[in-house]
Image (tube, rainbow over all chains, first blue to last red; front, side):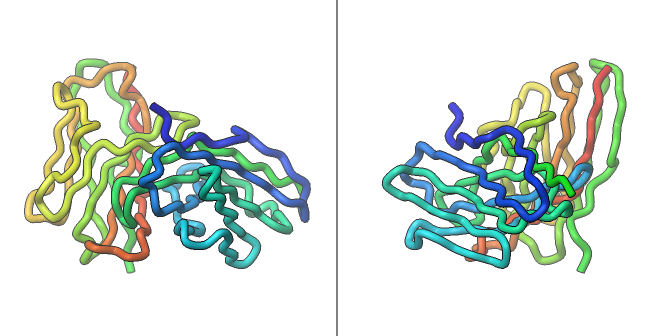
Length: 112
Length: 115
């Protein structure tokens, strides 16, 4: 059972453009929604996270939008840079630090 | 501060052979995780430790996989015997106990190839 569905699988964006990645979850008990960034040969690293009591969180060029009623959340990367080229994973858990369930990942390529 | 250290980074073995992966978490982190990451997919939890205790091993294939975390610090994940389908990256992560931030710190992973 895939509890967190992520789309698209891959994304190509021009430098300066906006990258948008979407995730949908099924378990209404989830209350913590992080995004992780992974470069080739490296482990995932936390990028930004949100809890369901807010609808949006922004950190620099990265923004999470959260829609609790639709059970969806998305990552927006503004002013995308070549250095943002990586695989992005959404995830969800019932409590912070608890078992994280990851989405399938989105490979983002930012062209200069 | 040193991050999560894993070894070996790469391992190639014949099927039916045993293999072991080692993980040293960030100092002071009580919670340790082993995740499996197949090519092009998201990580999947194999086992979670709180200190020495395995608190969630429901996804660990216990017929061939085993793990231990003696003294609540380093951890070892073993596969015996390995099968072709075990080829993947094995990620270790750690987090502080009762972490309100919820952040997991991952190592660089151990890439296993079973021939």
